[in-house]
Length: 56
Ligand SMILES: [Zn+2]
Image (cartoon, rainbow, N blue to C red):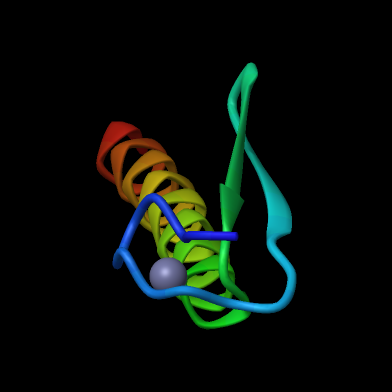
């Protein structure tokens, strides 16, 4: 199997849900993707908090 993200051939692919889509990636890319998503979530939450803060 080949990871679509990095093009490496791996024994197994890991499914990562991104929004409505499911990506099949190698474990390495899956981990990176998950981190990326977490960071995006955190950034969004932080942004919302800041907006609320300013609103006071
Ligand atoms: Zn990969």
